[in-house]
Amino acid sequence: MNISKSKAHQYVDDILKGIYSKVVFKTYSRGQALIELDSGTIDLLFPVDVYEEKLRHLSKPLFSTVPGLCFKKKNFIPILSALHRLKGLNIGVATGSPVLPELKRSGVNLIILTEDDPLRQAVEMLMSDNLDAFYHPSPMQIYNLDNPLSKKLACSKFHGYPSGFYLAVKKNMRDETYRTIDEAFSHALDIKSYDDFYLENK
Image: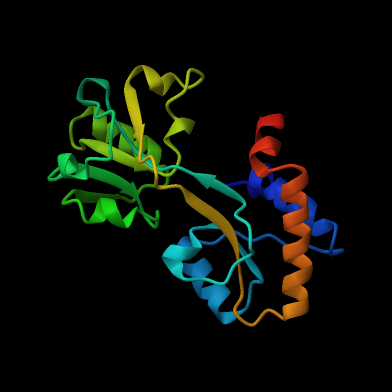
């Protein structure tokens, strides 16, 4: 993965370069990233569902999403608030992806997608009827007119369950450093949200 092409990287990089002369970005697997953050070898980790991991984090989320499920169009469940309807369904979920606790408790069978391209794997398994649906943290990225997958799939959102994705910080970050970074991000988000930045640079 070329992190420099990521919109989130560009947004965060612009803010940090306003504070520090040198900023180094590294990519890790989810598990390794949490280990590195816990040991203090990295200062910030993003984006992450901090409540799932119980991590110290900046005060404002970088962005928020509403997760959902994507189905074959003929099997589409438009409203996901009645979670009992999902009981027994085989739901694909990418390795390390934070899943709503409510979904876990609904009686679904979570099928872990382990390939490097979990979306491709999920779509293939869905089309071959090896999955009933797959979980996505922001299904509207898939279910839109610009995406050819929307001709095959229909996605629903878990309305009322937004997830904030934050920049986590190492536990032993000095308070002064934390305040400097937190104020810079809060100010930047007030001027131009990450969502606005993403849409402008799409």
